[in-house]
Length: 549
Image 1 (cartoon, rainbow, N blue to C red):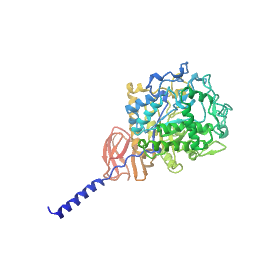
Image 2: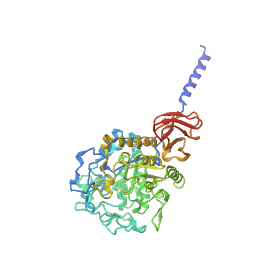
Image 3: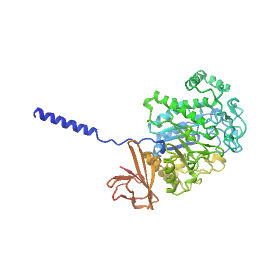
Image 4: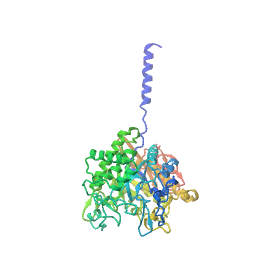
C-alpha cells in the first residue's frame, strides 16, 4: 500500500471515529421541583430503627391515644431507604416533620396528655431531638438519599416555640409574647398573637438586638459547646449584617442544617402567622447557606437546582393564584421567599372529574403561576377532612394525586391505605397513626394498592412532564391526554389514558409520537408501535402510561 492510500485510509478511520463520538446521547432526566413526588413523614410514626432512643428525657407519662412518642426515627427512614422502598414508590423528595430538640415535658391539650412527638414544639433549634436520632444519622440519611437521586426537605418552624412546662422554660419577653390569643379576624390578628393558649409566639416583627436566652446558654455550656455556638452566631451576624433579633437567630440555626448536611429544601410551618418579609429574609439566608454548602462540597452537589422553599399558608389554594386574602389585606407569598405553596383545596377538588381537575391546574400553573408551583395532597397530619378519609377509593386517590399537575405530596401510608380513623384517638391524633407495615405482609388488597401507587410514582419520577408539563386532552371518550415539558434542549412527552377498557384497546395519541415510534406502556410493561396516530395494546388494566422507548 503506497503512502497516498495509507493517508486516505487514515482519514477514513479518523472520520469513522469522529462519527462514533458524535453519536447522539440520550439526555439525562433532570430533576424538576415543579413536578416532584414528595413523601411526607411524621418521623415518630414511620419506622422504629433504633429502639435505644425510645424513651429520651424520661418522657414516660401516660398519654392520650397516639399522643406520645411511638419510636419512629431517622434510623427507621434510613432502613426503608436502604430497602428501596422510596425508590420503588417513585419518590424523589422526602419531607420529615421537624427533628430539632423538642420540649422535654408535655401538656394536657384536653384530649389527654401530649408530648411533642410531632416536632412542632421546639426547645432548641440547634440540636436534634435524641428521640429522632443524631446528627450522624441525619448525615447518613442525606448522603444515602442523594446517592439514590432523592432530596431531603426538612420542616422549619420560626413562628413559635414549644409550650411552657415545669421542665421547659419560657423564652425571654424580648423573644416571645404569651398573649393575646389570635382571633383570626384580620391580617394583624393572625400575626401578633399566639396561635393557641400556652404556645409562645416569637416576636418575628422585632429587629431589636436581643441576648441569647440564659437557659439556652447554660444548656450549651453543660453540653460543652457554648464557645463554638457563640462564635458561629457572631460570624453569622457579621456576615449578614442582620440585627441579633429572635427571627435571625432561628434562621441561622435552621440554615446550619443546609451548610452542614446539604439538605435541599424547607417546608415552612405557619407561614401566614408572621409578616411576609420574614420569609423573604429566610430565603436569602437559605440561599446563602446552600451556596456555601455547594462551594465547600463540589463533589456532593446533585445539580444546579436552587434551594427550595414551600410554604404552609393555611387555607391557600391554587384558585387563589398568587394571593392569599386575609380580608383586609392580600399577600403574595411567591414574591416573599417561596417557590411553592401547599394547595389546601386539592383534597376537595379531587372530587372533580379528571379533565376538569387536570386542565384547571395546568392552565393556572403555566399562566398565572408560571415560575412557581403548588404542592397537592389528599391527606396530611393536620387536615381533619382529607379526601377519602375512610380509604374507600385508594386507587382513584393515587391516580388523581400522582397524575395532577404540580407537586404531589404522598402522606405516609396513602399508598398502603393506612387507616385515618383510629378508635380512641381524638383530633389530629387519628391522622398520625403508626405506618401499617404489617398490612403489606398480610393483606393482598393493600399490596395491590401499593403496586398501583408504585407504578404511577415511578412514571412521574421518570417523566417531569407528568407534574411540570403542559396538559392537553387528546380524546374525551375514551379519556386520553398528553403532557409535554420542555426546558433548554430537554423535552419530555407522555400520553396517558384513563378509564379505558380492559383487554384489547386502541388508544388515539394524536401527533404526540410520530408514526413508527416504539412506545412502552409503563403500567403493564407492554410495548407497541404507533400506527396511524394510535397504539393498540392488550392489557389487564384500564390505564395506560405511554412513553417513547
